[in-house]
Length: 81
Length: 460
Image (cartoon, rainbow over all chains, first blue to last red; front, side, top):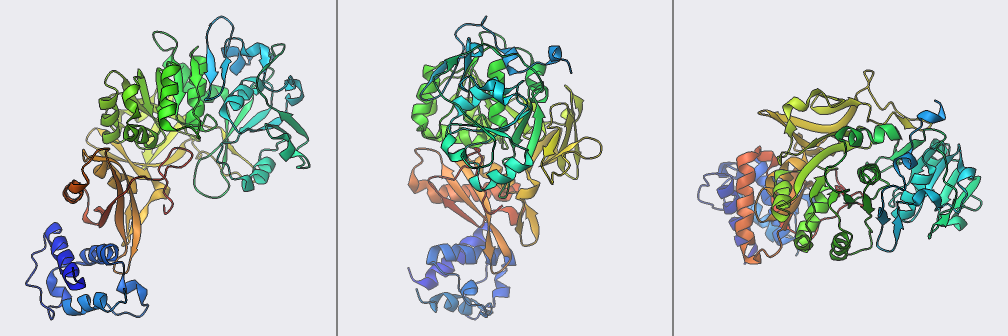
């Protein structure tokens, strides 16, 4: 499974658990519009760290948290495995 | 106090009850004629009036030495097996130790302790001693890192709950415990065995659980105690099937409904009770209705124990508490009114109090305080879960999140893991605030338990 599909699947799973009505996920959807609160993002980042083996937001001290779904996915795609 | 009023451990033992024993995995010693025998090579008189460090590598010789020393030594400090050797010098200074009872006398040459007495088996015949004084029992707290605190007890306080309960009905019990008898929970059981006229079967940290249970059976153990973690391990091992005790006791950790129900199912003919006790607060109470927590009407004064809840934590005043912390910089053990603050946080729901965790064990989740035990109790309610541990994990988003390690019951189909995970999360969402719901659940084969029998909480 590609990194992108792992990220999207985790977002959908957490939305289901948290009863968040997720809009259609596109690269330019802002993360704010996903309906996720900070706890949901914290869960997402923790699960992806277990699944993919990296947490791109902790590795780099100055990494800015992404603004859109596309930025978020790329943050995982761009980390050397 | 005149010697006639002294009632030491030896005064609870007599030759009239036959067939009493204390045993470990290697030796069986008669308690019936123990008073005319010595584990100290007949050197008890040299230890009279001294502050004695009991530093032995096994529980059997420790227990026999306690029987001899109580009423003779001024004080005795019990060293549990996991005591960090780096803390010994400090403890020796704090307790004013001037003698040591050991099985490794070579280690004590040139240590400055003036008297070294070797304990050995088999016992030698000796003239029975007469109790001379009320010996102070010094016990170490099983708390976190750093030098443990020394809590001072008198035998009357240590045995207060046992005397209050009165003798057990029916034949003299054969007691066992998963604890080490040099810790408060284990010492209570050792004292129960002696006061009840029964026998005692000691645990052995090097023995496999299945062999331990076989030994408990072979020695006819009827009454047995341990922490919820000890009991969960037994239930997981499958060894419980061959064992049928009459009384099963839990203490030392929160007994949640899942472990109480699990024990009732495994031992349908046993009474299952949980007791509240700590090294400092002594024995508070026992709960025998099969339910977690305790009735709200236990607060107030009851059976010689006064309890109240202040700032969420249980406070206890009774003649069974330790009388002081001992040491050069010892803190006060009680508040000005004589209450010991247990540090155990309770919550009133309906007409019952429930333990939610330790004040010192709080984890911080995004600025909110969370007791891991409260989360574990909800996870453990799932029928396929045997044991769990909640902890915090750092998060770049919220600072911290809750994650949980879970052990499934033996024989659970691994293919059901996802389904079980979803059910546990549903259960947590229904019963817990959202920040307490684990973000990640990991299924594990084992969880660390400390030598004191408690779930290891290294990040707490």
